[in-house]
Amino acid sequence: MQEHKRRQLAIIHKYGVTNLHRQNPYIVAWWSAAFPGFGHYMLNQYFRATLFTLTEVIINTLAHVNEAIVYTYCGKFELAKSVLEPRWALGYIIIYLYTIWNSYHSTLVQNKLVHLGELEDERLDTMVFTTSGIQYLELKSPVIAAIYSFFFPGLGIVYNHRFLLGFYGILWWLIYLTLSGAHESLAMLITGNVEESIAILNPHWLLFMPSVMWGATYHGVITAKQQNRLFRLEQRQFLRERYGASDVRIFD
Image (cartoon, rainbow, N blue to C red):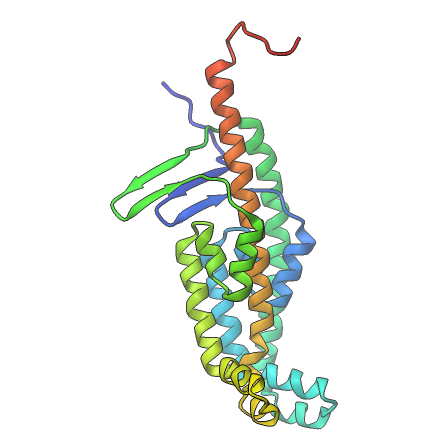
């Protein structure tokens, strides 16, 4: 009977590729601080990451955290204190700190699992056929993934075959663009209407966008590198299985 390994490094399914890989826990924690949930996306913990991102948007909006940040940056401290909603702000702080700690701790655990998975050397799949499509491992360009993600967050993730997460990112980027007035403001700025371009902006929704844009860009680059690593690892496994017993030696 075939032995079943305890730990897999990756699995290919109809929605994309889910895999374990080593990461710097401080970088993952930093992305959780930039936008709660982003660190968990780096760890491929999609369900909890989505819940954290939704919680961030909802409670941030109810507590008026972004508006308070904008007023603080502008030196309007009294206005920042008056706009902040304390009933929601305390809960926001607790969840915010928890996501940072949890992503850091999860990274440490996953790094250990990666080491154990590499020792077990579970055979990787290269292709999966489903009624909804075909998924496969292929070499990706981190630069192309970064360009797609930078100009429209979510596209780089789709490029890396993470379809559900990619379209989730595209949907939220459209929401941010619509509610912040960013595109209309950019069009007015290009035509020379500087004051109108500033007046049309909604600072609450605009403040989400830098974290989303740079987070999607980083995720696109890292995911492309992960997929390239899995592609080479599967090739190495295949060549070892097929030619490992051969008497032919290229190098002595």
